[in-house]
Image (cartoon, rainbow, N blue to C red; front, top):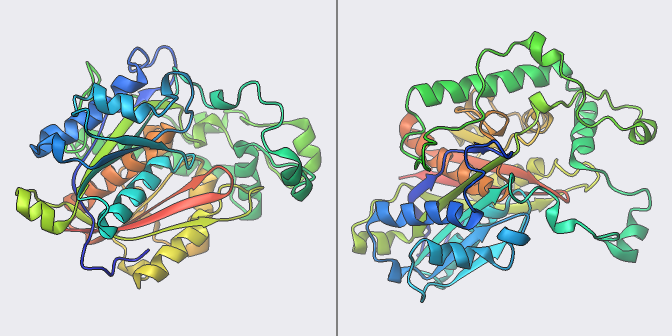
Length: 394
């Protein structure tokens, strides 16, 4: 989708919680995921000053939609945030890109005229609802026809990350250097207050909990492979087993939300748009490699936008694994100095359902902080999928 109608979709507020370590000792573990999401939903309305009765819908991304995060938990979070009971809500799942997809659905609704004001966001409490919880007890998630199409079977994401490193010739040193740079950039952004505009503290947590400083390549090099498996080593002898906990994203708790409307409605309400949704795309790729669809998604959204890489001032590419971002950069030719300028999921964390809107929040504020015009966001998603979005600073 490229924006060609007389209606548009603009972001007027973008907020996120600080991200907490996704373990029982993490700062956000004791916060119920409904309350965690409600925090960001409440904050975007409070910051804008609008009457919440005007909101046409709330679209929330959640990946492990089970237990406390199950049964359309976005509706419960909307009510917990104090929105009027008349405001509807729905929950979407495009795996790691769920809340980026929520932004896309919101933009499509605004441009089509189905919405005038909508909130898009997401949440994941990985310490309370562990990744994979929604599949527990399922012996055959795919059925007969899928197994016939992929008789050798697909692989976990960590193995896909290893396959990507092997295919694109990415070394352990390159991945570890990328990871260290992510932490350094995130630490600098925190120290210099570059996240302040997007953050809303939760209890005593004011900044992202997972950022580490003082690590070295020697320390990183001592970490062992996170995904070594003897059967996989025999099946894929090209794998170097260089993906570690240090060069992969952190398990994390957090939420994020964006208040979106049209330029016309924003003017009527006295709201100042931060950015316009310029173009959106979603793409699929080989599910064995799983995480490579960011490459065709980037090309697709640039073509739809009528833009080139040189037109893009900042990129946000989700750091699910260092190998994913490095392969993407090699393939599309992006300037690494424009990529994840405030660090990424390796340093900040990857709260699955919240990450798409978190990246969008960071990208929106970073464009304003740096005076850039266009930002491109993309993120890999389980199953060989990826969303891509281009926003224009206003």
